[in-house]
Length: 262
Image (tube, rainbow, N blue to C red; front, side):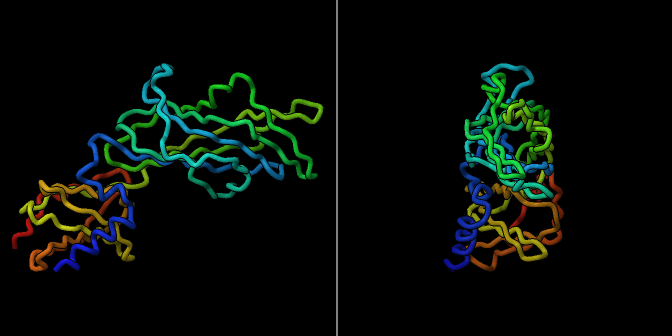
């Protein structure tokens, strides 16, 4: 009997950890990923030193409104590595649902340019950018939905020649925000069954989680598609499968009450 519970537990440790933390998950949050891509430029390398990514929760310019994304991948990025549809994950975090007005990139000092002839030069950031590169976002984050913010750099326009072989970095960036994953929620009865839950796609990709002690469950980070949801209990005679559950990118699908007693 214990084998039935082992597999959901193992699944929880391997796939989408945040979706399994139903007991601890606070309400009223959304998930945000910040990714970077680039339009090609006529250079060998355009290296940008990104130290931190922040978002502003309010419409005003109040400095207290800035929040640092806690899951950051700092480093020196060659923008041209992410041309032609490629991108990379800069940062992510769980944030309070609501409106995000701006995003800010905190840059380090190791910015540089390599020309086609092999010549390298430091890229200087204007003094006005010492507090970071601020970009307008104006996105509304819905509770429990996962969003991607794509920072689309224009390398050609971001490099400004100063003369005498010197260059400034004045980032020209287009921001694109879109929902990329929804979720499934509901309530099982009897609550004491505390089932493990599989959300399984047509390709057998699986996301896992558990119902809480009160029977509630929320599986987040589910991409758009059609799924079946399997409920596994310690006594397999109470297992249940719900078929043909369709999820959209910006939706938390409510299954209502799922009765496992028969």
